[in-house]
Picture 1 (cartoon, rainbow, N blue to C red):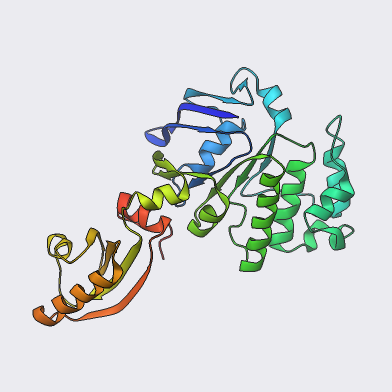
Picture 2 (picture 1 turned 30 degrees about the vertical axis):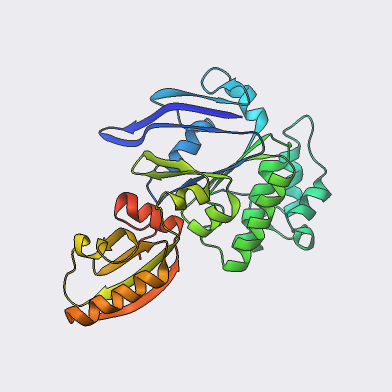
Length: 303
């Protein structure tokens, strides 16, 4: 459904997107995962025609990104990070207005119901919550029944309940056979929603696989995190039982292992024999966050 080849966007000496390549299959939820400033939004803006690539090519539903933009606009729907809506219109009025832009459109009452806005259909846009405005923005993106839907960080700034509601909407779109391109910096969101994920950092696509495939690239099922008084070397920690990889970020050490009990036992023994004190020791399942840290040395979302 989408073929992207060597897409590049520069602003002077700064390269926002650096030769990105990926494909998206029909009916797939494809995620672009990365921190703010990674190039996710710029990539989406190029694919939907809001920014012109400096080089590279792309096809959407068989149409050329540069030569057939009119045809592309007919087959895509877009929800951007920031959407300016007519604040004094009601939910129903603004959807009706957008519907009038197209020769055919979905049933407006059904779409309002699908976006869980029935009780708000006669309320003005300015009185909606953040989650309700995001659902309205998605409704406007869906009104002409597009084949491909772009969602650019749709849950940023929302409370947990509103995020979960939007997750359900995305999963419903997938169940209807829609192709969805979703950008996010939330690892749990990417893991739950996406069939495949492209991890972006500083304009580059640094990894591309299924969520489970990316986590398996660590070659470890579990992670042991702790802080230490005094420096420990990566070489020393790799000698502990069953440790396959070591992550060190500031004063936090992370050991990746397939045999959690063996690693913990050896770590405690090592601590006792070396008279080294650990703190904040915890264990957990390896995540997409660990993949990003392993590849870049930084977290997806810096505190």
